[in-house]
Length: 556
Ligand code: ACM
Image (cartoon, rainbow, N blue to C red; front, top):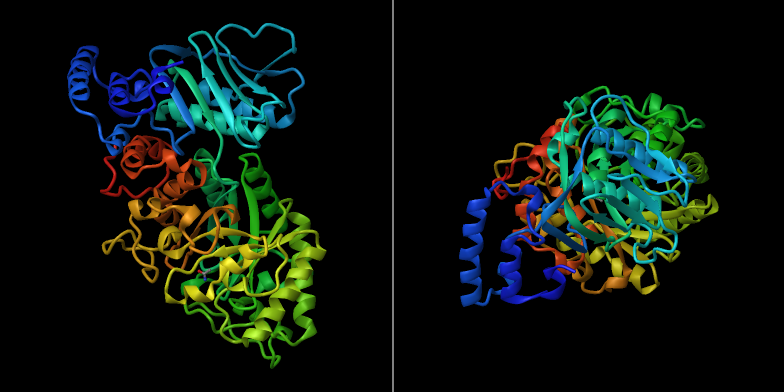
């Protein structure tokens, strides 16, 4: 047991951290002598003055994001990784563990992809190996948690499920230098500090949303987003696949949706769409990184691209022209026509067939063309269609007053004076769960500050600190903590034309939201987060991510 467990609070902890018993071993740059002098000075300070509680948080003990539940890293002792360090899995390990092992082995060594080594249950683990272990009785880990035990002669990552092993490997990756992100790197010797990490997420829903409707984003760019999400343990990618300006997913029974409705975008560019085969490729890519894809077809509003493609969806039977501006609220499916529900059935049936996850998002936001009663009846009817296809519906906050099934999720988003219309608490009262995406904290398309060229400002400007410094459990006064399934950060794309634009607004704020979703409340503090985040600059750069070098962060 290290000092962190023996002395959890107060000035002793201040001293022990500065000494570095479970401190910044992996990232320390100071020489031994300077370190020794610092220890003496720190001891004097810490012995003569009780450290205020907030001061404990200013010097991070590691740079892992999201902050794990428990980290105990020793100052001395390390495990050395060379080109020949084996990654070991059980002889009977499944395909997912094999894949996680292969990716880890490939990351650690230069050159060609490497396979993990399988060993029989009773066989001795080879010396100096990194072992990935599934332990079905490991109830502490839960569905996504893991434990890491680094000794000088072995590393063991254990979890109850492959998702936990995957996350253990992401943490290990963050303990290694950014050079591991370069596939072409030359042979190198890496070290891990001796110690233990125990970790599990706070929330089951840790999401990001991409609006690929206002501007289309090619499949490879979406995969890149998934790559960064996975590093920070985000597990839901919600795709906003249809809006006034474009329809982005192939629907076999309604080919004009993509042929015509997908042919443009904001500003009049050529648009685009994903074939069902491409969507499936993305679903599998994301699954391999523990990310669930949630498809959204927004309705009854935000539907101009559909109305332009199929005139029977409008009340007057006249197709409107395609739309390439950025207004909202002007379009709606006709709620009184059966052809509307036949359309919804076709969409939901085809989407359900290619979506292994349990959710289909049907939007429901910003509807100005229907009466409130028409709107509520519409929502209740489309919810039944989703349930008939064996899925749970998700809708934006406006759907809460409808008579919903408790298995439906309500995604809270409003943060302005109209928030009273977004009565998420009604859904909590019937036993339903809420996803928190408040516009003034999580909307990644809001500008960072007045100098940000990209993005909008209607929900306010959102600095990295503002995105980070709020508490999901108490955010909505009338929604109790047990009704919060998690957090999600949407990125609307009115002003975004290419991958580097998306990344500039998303990173680092999405990383802040990732920590809100994963880390326990008592493990979060802005001063500590910004110091840890500073260490991630070289890694994001090595991954080719166009992140915003916010002046709030002391970047390395
Ligand atoms: C929304 O921002 N209209 C969900």
